[in-house]
Structures are given as C-alpha cells and as structure tokens.
Length: 401
Image 1 (spheres, rainbow, N blue to C red):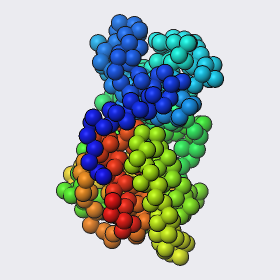
Image 2 (image 1 turned 120 degrees about the horizontal axis):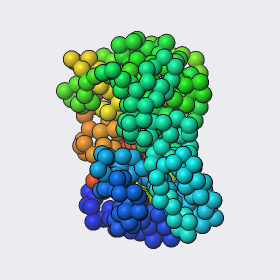
Image 3 (image 1 turned 120 degrees about the vertical axis):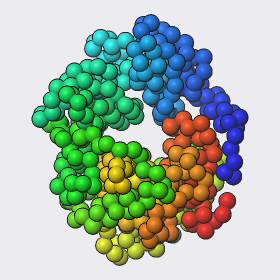
Image 4 (image 1 turned 90 degrees about the horizontal axis):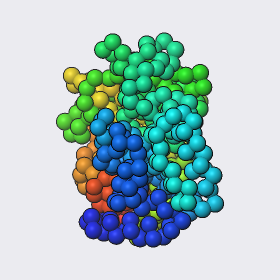
C-alpha cells in the first residue's frame, strides 16, 4: 500500500480538479499552464518560474495556495486564492485589499481567482502586510530595532514567517491569523530553560506577532543528533507546565486523527478509506494509555516535534516553534518525531529517539493527523509519503496493511 508513483499522484489530482468544477483556480494551484498564465499577468519585474509550496482545499468552498515565484528581484511568496461561485465577493475583497495597499495583483472576477503577494493575505493583517514584502524596513514589535524583512514561509490564512535583519543581527518574526500567540510565547519563555528554546524577543500588543532571536545551527538529523534532541526534550518535559496550555487527552487526539483522515480523503480517497478503518482501534488504544486517560501525571510537550523544529549547534539542540506546546504523555513528542520523518518523505522506516517507546496509539494518532501534510506541502512523492503515514499508524495498532 505504501508504493505510489507520480503517475498515480497526477491522476488523483486530475480527478480532484474534475470533482471541483466550481473551483476553477484549483487547476492553477495544482500547477500547469493556468498557473503560468496567471503569473504572466503580473508586472514584468515580478514574473518568473512559479512553484506551489502549500495547498489547502475546502471542497465546494475555496482553494488557497502559497506560491513561490522566482523573478528578476529574487524569489517572492504569493497567495493564490479561488472561491466557489457564491463567494465571488471574497475574491473581490482580496483584490481590493491589494489595490488599496498598492500591491500588485491579478484578479479574474468571472472565475473568482486572485493572485496577490503574501503581504496581501487579509487574514494576517496588519502584520502580514509588513512581513510579506521583501526589503520593507519596519520595527515590528517594541524593543526591536528597525530593519529589513525577508519572508520565509507562508501558510495562507494561518501564518507568515519572516526574518528581520538589522546591523548584523537577525530575528524570526511570525505573524498569525489568530490572537493569543503572544501570551502563549510569554508563558513558555518563563517556564522552559533559556538554553532549550529560541529566546523570545517580543510580541505585538494584539498577540498576533511574535519575535524570537535567530538561532544559529542546522536542522536536527535523526540518528546522528539523537543525544542532543533527547537532552533538550528531557529539559522540556522536566519543566513545570505553565497554566493555560491545552491538555492532550484522548478526545483531542482522536479529533486530530479524524481531521487528518478527512484531509487525506480530499486527495487520495482510497488510502483515506483504509485509514478511516483504523479509527475504532485507535480509540481503544488511546483509552488504554495511562496519561491520556488521566491516570498518570502529564508533562510539558513540544506538541509538534520533528527534525525541522530542532536546531543543532555544537552538539546542543534548541527547540523552535512551540506554537502547539501542550501538556500530555511524554511519548507524544517521540511519536510526532517518527511521523515527521515519514511526512517529510525522508524514509519509510523512521528512526526512533533513544527513549522509552511511545504508548500504543500515540504513533497512530500522530501519523493520521499528519496524513494530508505531504499533499498539502506538494512533496515530490506525496502519495507515497501519505500512504507511509497510514501504514505507520496501522503498524502501531497491530494492523499490518
């Protein structure tokens, strides 16, 4: 079941596009001539080779894609959005927002498609407008110097990550669509040892923009960096959890798995159907997990641990992006570490951390929650990676595919 070839992936996406005739822009988001045609409508200094790096499809409702366009001025992030026939006004508002702030855009009213810079993502205003355009000089939060921003990653209507540079120093800026991230970051900064996490540099008053000091190093490598990763995890798990963090109970874990299976069904109904059949076994496994069931003390968790969430420098690991920090079973971080390797297409047989193995059900929950991720991130072998996650969940539950 884990074997998928690009031909099958292309066929599945063609079926998806045929299934959503009202979302004309879906064909552009899946790549091809329509995307090239839209990019060619931009001013000449912004045109170039385009690549979709993140895709979210709400069947019958909307398509949102993060697009990287490599033009004469460098690679820039763009937002491609398309709406269902009854939501033409949303595309008009996207285009009007870009026009009001003098951002280049392409708007096709009849097909409800709009292509705007990441700075034109209305869900991230006002912070996304400053972070989404390369070279803009800004002072994003009190206490930081004025400097130039460079956008790094855009998750449409969710988050925009950028780098601020000033006088040889760097900070990572994260603009969020929802509030509360500033309070979350401040609580964690006061609870976790300073060496274990990226230092907090400040937050905006509305809590939607968070700044951390840049951490030198490289992403962790499963296997060779395990000792450093385990050391920083022990420091995290041994820290007293601050108040107000979500509790990772069986209901929350099941909900994440169900949502993951539903997201996978958009792209690969066959594999999603198999994954759906694992959910009853997952429920029984989670109910038998002591910490999840409330029969043991929970610990402070990273919540979304993977190799790209850890930076290693001189054999010391530092955790990044604790947006999903929560309290729950220690095995959850080890479970997401395994699932993250498969989701990234790194290997079919992921390398476990040298810690106590996760309780049964946790690897399955982490794998199913991530199942649509390879498709959304447009990985070259996305079908194989997604099927590999489902196979990993089946093995954890003792149900070989």
